[in-house]
Length: 116
Image (tube, rainbow, N blue to C red):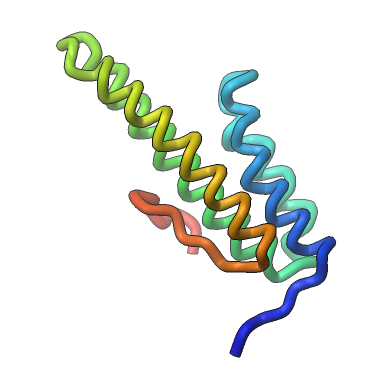
């Protein structure tokens, strides 16, 4: 059975994913802004609760991967790894945003499930 979500619910779920781009503007924004959206709207919208957790899990995971890549950049191998990771992050967030807007429960690849 396919779940049907309201336009408002889908929009908030989509915004939760889009909020991750705040990390490109200010430090830790990729976690802080999705967390704010999640905390404000999770009890009101089921899709936001689900996608908010998914977004936060992915953003925390990517942050850990970036830290590891930065440490590896001391050995030069981390620089191309960091570039690939940031491109992957950008594309994955766009895909998740589109899927959330379509009312789908998207699961990010390579996300560690910290929040269940």
